[in-house]
Image (cartoon, rainbow, N blue to C red):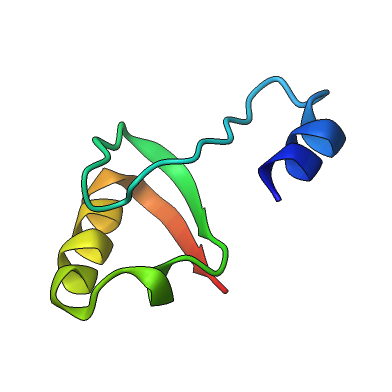
Length: 67
């Protein structure tokens, strides 16, 4: 999935695509996080902490889009 996304979105300069463990990842401040079919694979005991980390990384008025 990441290869296809990079191939079709590489012309966008202000976009970053990353593959990482959401539980361990250190988020920087951001306006948008897209969690595309990933949070269901986080162990239930870590899921709330992961969502909290994402939420805390959002700029005021930012958005998390979970699919």
